[in-house]
Structures are given as C-alpha cells and as structure tokens.
Length: 120
Image 1: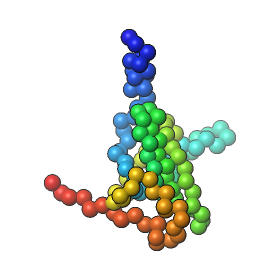
Image 2: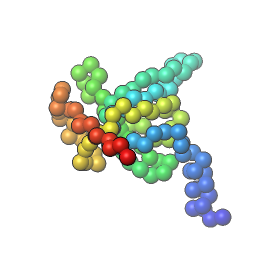
Image 3: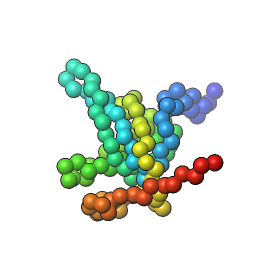
Image 4: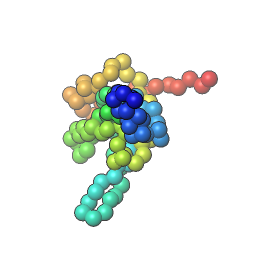
C-alpha cells in the first residue's frame, strides 16, 4: 500500500456524510459546539456563505452575518466535529464563486436572490 493510498484511507474516515449540500450564496443556520469552562454548550450561528474551498477533508467555508450592525465572518472546516448541525434556510442565486462584494454593502443591499427550485 503506497503512502498516497494510506492518506486517502485515513481521510475517508474523517469525512462527514451527514451534512447537506451547500453552495455559495446559501443562507444557513448552524449549531456549533462551544467549550466554556467545564461544559460544552450549543451556540446558534446564522449567515450567508460567501466562500467555499473544496479539498476532501480540508474543505472549509466562510459564513458572513451581521451582528449588532457589524459584519462578522467566520471560517469553519466542513468536516469538523465542532459543527453539530447545518440547515439550509434558502438557496442563493449568485453568479460568482466568492461573494466578497457583500463586505462593502449595508442593509437591504446585502440580500442575495433566492433560487427558484423547479419541481421534476
């Protein structure tokens, strides 16, 4: 067994299959495990995905939300055990792979159009 096959075998055990399919522009609601002192609590986090990097077990995504009038971005590893659940609230219709232009916009201008799903 070559080194490449060993690495692929280890990575396949780390990849989570219980997460939904997410894309750039989607609005998601997540539950994140946060360690405080001697206990772990679940913290909700809701925002728009502005970036996704694919790479097997190294995949990550960046979520942007507005908190008390200030923009907050946070990057999460996709297959991290810190993420308890991800729920897609709305699918976004965007023409870009990175939504960095949302950083310069305020209020209603930060909205992303929702994608109309066709019933087949």
